[in-house]
Length: 142
Image (cartoon, rainbow, N blue to C red; front, side):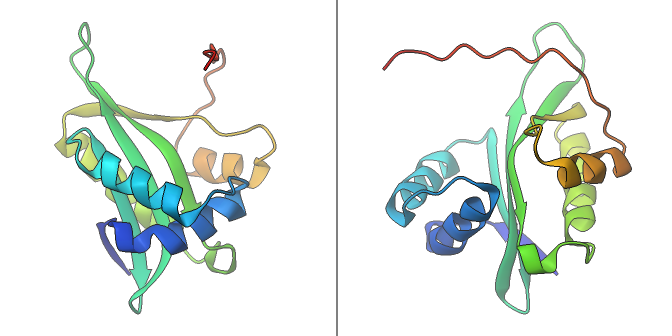
């Protein structure tokens, strides 16, 4: 397994993986998002390859904290190809990003995981995450 930076050429497979998560979108839209996000140093878009085939991706965001010593890393999207789940890919990626987060001065990793993703919840608990309730969202009018 090999982890590398995502690029716009990965848009097709990333779109397929997002569809598996329930986020169907067009390849053009995802390609444009990859291009835009790749320009920001606080964003980390990574893919996992096995035998030169992308089998997973993760989108991370470094969030500096004004009043705390440690910053935090947020996982916004993390998908492993359905046929490759339970093969250790997710654990390998999580170990990698935990080391990356520490290297970047973070003292924690946060994520939001939909309540229907019970298998993902079990994965995160197994990796040492704990559920912290109270998540607020304000949807802004267009």
